[in-house]
Length: 417
Ligand code: C2E
Ligand code: MG
Ligand code: MG
Image (tube, rainbow, N blue to C red):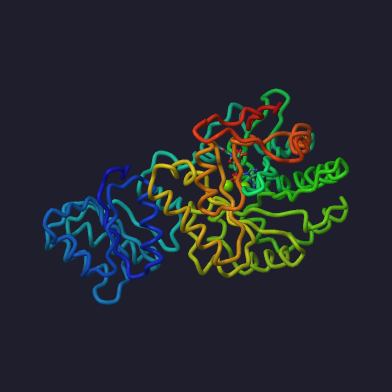
């Protein structure tokens, strides 16, 4: 755990500094000092009263490289921890590590660029992910066989959570979130089974099965007078399949749903894994008229260039920033930066995980367009979702400021009332 520690980040690339600095702030570091060269880093260390508990350094820098820095750190008798980061191959990073250890330095780990949250977590020992996604041990023994039979029996169903336009206070969209409705085990959340779905390569089956249910639900609620856009979560793996747009197109036609009624959500971390196939697939989906959102923005490590390579239509600010927003300056700063970036790139901005009226007011003042969260509704099955949206002409009722009660309807694991 790095909470309360002073960290010095050394890199000549300002984007990497920004990423690492954001990451360490999210781990509640006491301070994150930045140096854009090894020489600057040594200057920081020489400052009187400047305690540094951990240095995180790039290996390739113009004036003095990371290898020289290791020698200099020994010379100044640096006693803190050190982590090495580089885009060089693993063998080179291992040699640098060995050299550092021979200098008597306390090297706690190494990471290869491009930086990914999972690899940073494995070095910097976070006991839990910020949102605890996918780290729950399910009650049921989730196996590939059980998932297959669940797919055959139609046990995987979409639950829907409304997206609310902040200015109009009106429901304008829905996010479909998968639930496994097992007759014996009850309703399971994605965290209980998605890791097994992914490791057993069943993601495609699940997505296409779910899409069919979602498209049928859309047709049924359009008949009842509900006209909103629905978004579906997909993984980096699916986005890399060149036939993906053709299959989705066929499912849409078979069910009489237009691509413009659909959006897809991809997590920011998936953007990091994109290849040429992914860009082709996303471009085709966009040409078909679908919206494309970057989900969980702020938790991934996509650099600005990777984000600019594609015309995303929506940016969803991760709920971990919303949670701390009313008190924590770092979360406030991240929300502000997301709004600026979203505006520059002509994206609609959505705040995820709005639970209190104070959070609603905060994002409203920052110019965020839409909100999603337990303040309005938890994800619910279609039977509850449609009446919920049609009630009051889709306008949501909000508690007054200062009253921090959250919505009582629905539950991620229960049938909503
Ligand atoms: P996500 O796409 O970021 O979805 C938002 C998650 O936040 C949902 O969790 C939702 O129930 C929860 N949430 C919404 N508002 C609030 C709030 O105010 N407070 C709190 N504490 N939580 C809130 P859920 O349904 O458990 O889904 C977790 C993740 O699983 C999703 O995150 C998404 O990444 C993944 N997922 C869900 N359905 C699918 C799916 O059909 N396919 C794929 N590939 N992934 C899915
Ligand atoms: Mg999502
Ligand atoms: Mg999200």
